[in-house]
Image 1: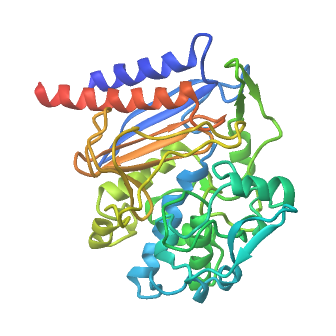
Image 2: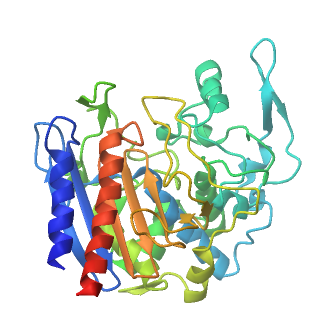
Length: 397
């Protein structure tokens, strides 16, 4: 697979050199047995230490699948009914109302939801929650009524109104933070503790946590802001909080790319890890299938706070579904990713995919805002395409 190394190395060099660049990137590819490519280029901070494989990233929404895994374990054990009201496990969610709009004086108009939110809806992002950087209504609640951002990792940040009645449509938002609260209610422990015992330890994942050790802090990459002129500014004071008020299942983890590869391998290996099984094969089988009920569908994410996100979408024009808890591409992607593969992304432009059909997956990590960065996002797609080119070349040979 020398073509794999040369092809991927070229992509990493290309995005870290020249005028329009990323500060640094770590990217890795794994098959079912182990890592088959690892690359690090650029710097953790502009003008600073070089990017290395053991660099720690705020992995943002690539946290979601790990939180989802802990919920699937509860389902396996008969402790969680996905279709029961989520308030049975996380009572606070039962107090939330639906936002119908704002009155003439700018006050929110609220009403009771027509039905209770279920954990299945939360896992599928049909529960009614949004994000202020993708929703004009949440943005208004933040600006005019003090609704805190989810990056504060505060309880108030998730105890928000619903944007619509549960199950009405797909909208990406803080649903998986609530899944984490459901898991805490089932287990009687903090989500980070549950992840450690039931996911990280069986997979041998050590360099990943909601709160960084001093060693992890020393190896952390700095998040940078991309200006309209494509310039990069280090955001030295911007970070997810260590010791957060709540462990945010939707976005709160810090980790290294090699650690995430172990999680990807578990999904490639039908739920098995090196130190124990994480999920049953039959759970993996149904959890990776798209489960939205038409006309529900995955839509473009509109960037309503330009400093945090651009308009962003994977594979525009292709059908996409949502599973427990991944995006599923329903058609083959231009990169070579087959129909039925799963993946997602993190706000600071990290991306991953898991292709169970071909037994391969990868992760691309940068630390740049806003999401959908034109250099990092395109670089990631080029990276994924390079992997499939090398695979088809290897098969042909």
